Amino acid sequence: MGIKGGGLRRLICLPGDVLSANADFKSPAAEAARVQAPSGAQSGPVTLILWLMCLAHFLHDTLQALLSSVFPILKDQYHLDFTQIGYIALCFQLTASLLQPVIGWFTDKRPLPWALPCGLFATMIGLALLATASTYPGLLLAAALVGTGSSIFHPEGSRVVRMAAGGRLGTAQSTFQVGGNFGQASGPLSAAFVIVPLGLKGIWWFAGVAMITVALLSYVSRWYSANLAAAARRAKRAAASAGPGLARNKVAAAVGILLLLMFSKSVYTASLNTFYVFYLIEKFQLSMRDAQLCLFVYMTAVAAGVYFGGPIGDRFGRKSILWFSILGALPFTLVLPYANLPWSIVLSVIIGFIMSSSMSQIVVFAMELAPARTGMLSGLFLGLAFGFSGVAAVGLGAVADVSSIETVYRICAFMPLLGLLTVFLPDVGGRRA
Picture 1 (cartoon, rainbow, N blue to C red):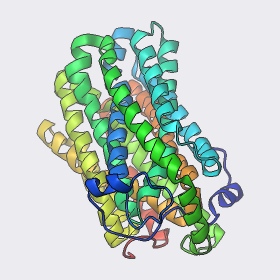
Picture 2 (tube, rainbow, N blue to C red):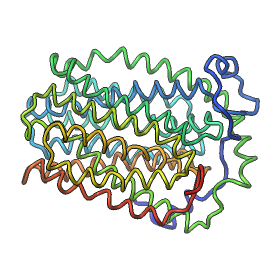
Picture 3 (cartoon, helix red, strand yellow):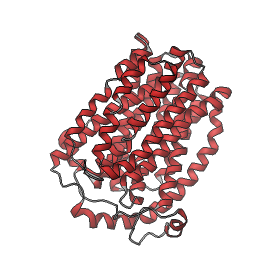
């Protein structure tokens, strides 16, 4: 990202927050009556907005997941090798990675409520090009546009969720992120039942999903715009006491450790998201449809881990869930390359659930270190997660070309060892570990 230590400290160590005190969730019916009121003090989570953002994230990432789900079709139709598939993933991940923290930094200063539906349009343009591209450069451009849509949606989405969280940061962020994980999980189903029978032209069937998402995000954008002034007043009142009170160098060091933890998770998940279908087809001779269904089972476990990780982190502390999430997966990643088909499916489910349980907690941990930089930190962590995954996809694709897919999983099995760095993190959020 080109951000050095001193610059990182200056970017993240500013006071302020947009959240009010902790409170219990209220029913969606009760929230609907007050969701348009911008001036009152927020006394608890705005449940309607949180669940609308969860649904919008689900629909958005369903569209995004179409890209990785059609990799086997692209490989056959365009006669690509694994390295070329990795470069398509890299174009997607780099635009999502590099733009997210930039957009987040900009919108920390000038929030853009209507960026949410605009990001969805960028995704749809990319998917339309993917369905019609006739050359490999066209595929790369399509992937880059889909990544651009992601980079616009996620920082502002995280800001809205934080505004609506009412102090329950882990639970709110998990509610938001689980929608995205279920959307990613739906990608293999879309490929198995729509794209495989119809080919790349089947992408056009998802135009209705795009329109529904635009409508949801337009409603949320109106609430977001109406509540900006009240959020700014809360941020000003919270400025004196925001953050855990750590020195700047300790905050920067903690953010660096969190980035390394994100790196370890991103590399391993890239091996499954990009190459798991190929692994099952090559090692166990599964059909493409059955392999896509196995990928769906894995991604559903990932979504479940994200959802349950948030409340656990709020209750027991961020570090506790990080220890469980990263090191807890190590025994299972070591066994996976040597398992038969049934055990491979079981192990992938366990790994997906455990490793994903801290996905939202890493982001919330960083936000609690520097609450005034919600958009920038969200963009930095989610963006770098995309970037790490993209670079890993290229590198792992090259390993698969010169060796085998099984070699990829033998190498990646040791990535959870980076979880030992958790010992150097401060205790923030929930009950202290």
